[in-house]
Length: 260
Image 1 (cartoon, rainbow, N blue to C red):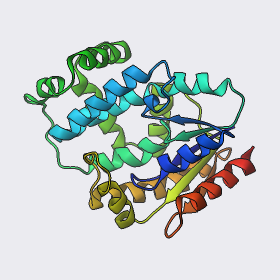
Image 2 (cartoon, rainbow, N blue to C red):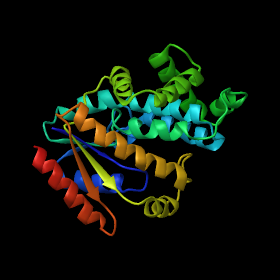
Image 3 (cartoon, rainbow, N blue to C red):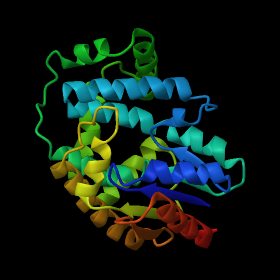
Image 4 (cartoon, one colour):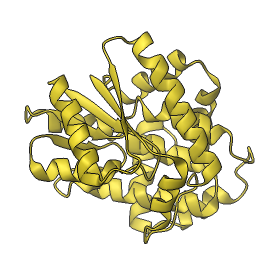
């Protein structure tokens, strides 16, 4: 059984799933942070990609941010296949076939320039040299090119397509099945922003009220469409407003238990 926990940044996904992992009754996989599992064979590459994502945030270039996101999501398939051998229910923090349905349209609404200028070179320089080599090797392995700009542009272009076409593209790109269940952690944008701004690390490119509001709207649209298009996938919504992390964790655990 596979479930995906999704929601805008600040909705509490990582905290909830850390609690579930600590209890030991499920396997937890992070779709874009394989290094959250220190035993992952992809941990070093995942950390390098996290640095590349931060470099894209610093430059404010959406195409570079999405190129890195694509490369991060490419790690999910082998990570999930390895984790599923355990036999316990598998729960993912985000999912490569679900989250882009909300985040690609959000990123498409950001102000951007269509040419890279000097920013691709600046992006490479903004990474640690050893990490940049790992990112470059992974980029070449996945696309046949060391230029991230076409990858990010192509990924961004998917935002203009119908949801079914986007889902087909994601399935071809990442080679993973849809989860059996999707759990949306629903939290108002103002509450989510308060949480993200309390973090010690710097915020990401999309962590603004306007963009998180767009992401929240696109989650609603995508998750209303998904069970009609794919009836085998159940969608659940957990209202997080005014609830403690322990209460939300129990609500998510109940959903997972009901699907097993």
